[in-house]
Structures are given as C-alpha cells and as structure tokens.
Image (cartoon, rainbow, N blue to C red; front, side, top):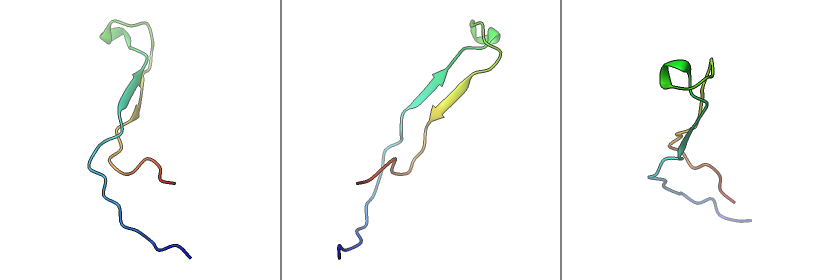
Length: 44
C-alpha cells in the first residue's frame, strides 16, 4: 500500500471571466467567473 502524503499548495487557480455585462461594455446580461480556488486543483 502507498503511504498517505502531505502536500502544501501556496498558489491560486487562475480566474477566468466569461462574458461582459452592459455596464462593463459588453452585450451580455450575465457574466460568469470560473476558478480562483486556493486548494490543490487535482493530484495524481
């Protein structure tokens, strides 16, 4: 069996904003922000 390890993550996942509302100069009614988490995104 493999040993359970301890891993530290000091970075953040990049933030991507999709769409721009009218107040931001775009044509969309809604915008979505994806990412920004501070935990490990995946580990194999």
